[in-house]
Image (cartoon, rainbow, N blue to C red; front, side, top):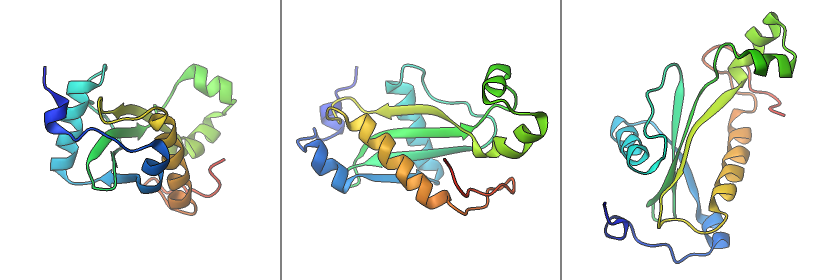
Length: 149
């Protein structure tokens, strides 16, 4: 087993300090995506992803740019009977609204690189960041972000 203390500096920061300096960034380069998948393969209980459709990788980093974790979002499944029934979508509503639904496929905080409650803080920070970024955005499918609530 790999010793994480040799790869990563242990965190001595408190959650409140990390929140002020937290960096959540979209990964667009192939080497970063390969690194993310390697970390998922090594540390996530489901392993790395073999995605189909659209996907977006994020790094979670401290103020120095050292990775604390990885998040991966993928496009939603086209048809899920129970989801569609629960939401109450007609076929037309599903066609129009499905591009606004995403699947959180993986969420990993690296062992020895976390503090209590960091996961909840990251998820909240990412949600606020996504709302600001996507409001009014036009997705590749042509759907508009608008009001995400």
